[in-house]
Length: 259
Image 1 (cartoon, rainbow, N blue to C red):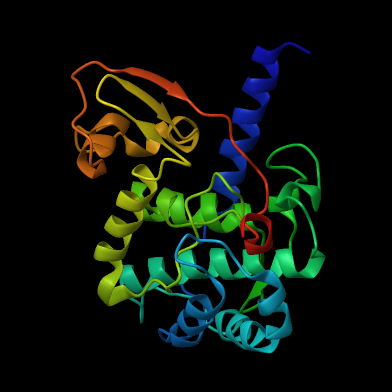
Image 2: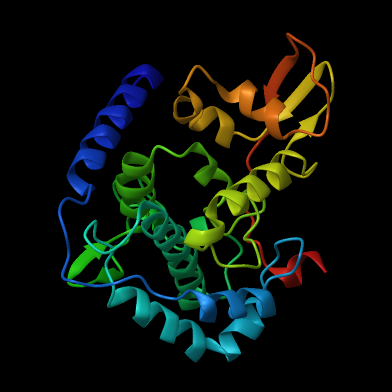
């Protein structure tokens, strides 16, 4: 099968799944929750560089499980939750359930080792292990069917963490409605100025493939990917720089691997 046909079929499957897994309407009468317990866990087990102490978190897993139970019993709805409360919830949910998935299979060298398959069909991100007020999700549902499709916020690509070296770091704080805009700006600035993930010079850019994979998400209000790079980069960038994309490193973001 040719690469063009494979790309076309993948796009069709992806588009279909996005439409199918979007969340419509309200779920129960839940009200916004506190993410304080998750914030405390992240501060304890995630370094400032974004590496996760999975062994330490495993030994203290009951605290993560308690937070996951809180997420599972409170599905955001438009009646009681503001936009920022819903978005902060889903970013934290994606990151917390990713931690659960890693711990369930730890030790692993890469999240992709947990399950290999066809993208958006049967990979690790398509495992239905998340239940929230009776609705079943996988990580793809949350990222693509909810966060990307409902919130139109490109900075989320600097906030959700896929437990891999080349991902934007897992921040050592939980996202909250009251600080969300500042937190997303912080994540964007940190990611784009991190030489492990983007190598930015005045005339030459080597960017994360995230900015290529999701380039369409950055095209809004007359902006594009380069506008975001210029906005958050510490480097003054030429008008028409040479742009390449770095290979993606899927090694686990495990503290023991980088000490």
